[in-house]
Structure formats: structure tokens, C-alpha cells
Amino acid sequence: QVQLVESGGGLVQPGGSLRLSCAAPGTVFSHYVMGWYRQAPGKQRELVAVIGSGGSTNYADSVKGRFTISRDNAKSTVYLQMSSLKPEDTAVYYCNARWELSYWGQGTQVTVSS
Image (cartoon, rainbow, N blue to C red; front, side, top):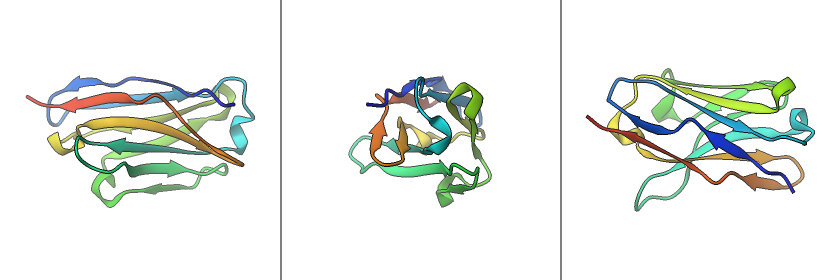
């Protein structure tokens, strides 16, 4: 069983920035493909960004150029740096770890509002 611990959500004004963190202690972290997903009220969960074990990245079109996913294998942590935030980025953000199985974090709320 992999436990994912997320942090960094909150309330931010449009145009602001936030950094989400997801720690996976006690895992062979470097083997995992790590991703961030989000789910807004009334909508399906969608992929935001993913980073492979080798560091390759992929982003949803809606966040390209604004969000950056990165990983620190020594700290068993994946990050999502979010900039130029928009109200439509408001959602619960979930961390995902995938190798042989898929694991989810508990989610962290991000609210973009003035």
C-alpha cells in the first residue's frame, strides 16, 4: 500500500501562484509515474500533468505554459507549480502514483477567486 500525502492547496486570487506537494514516503519512488489530476464540482476528474520515472512530462492543454510538474526522488516528492491561476482552475487536486498499481492521495482544494 502506498500512502500519498498532499499539501499546498488554498485560496488564491486570479493571476496568483501556488505550489502543491505530494510525498510518498517508504516507496521505491523513482519507479513510479506520478501525476496530478483535478476534479471540479459537477465535472469528471481530469489529468493535469504527469511526470515519468525518467522525468518526461505531459500536460493538459489548459495548463500548458502555466503549470510545471517536477519530482525530487531523494525526497520521494512530486510538485505542481501553478502560476497565472484562473478561476477555472478551481478544483480538488489529487496526486496519483502508478507503477504496478495505481494509488491516489486524499486531495487538496485549490480555489481561485477574488
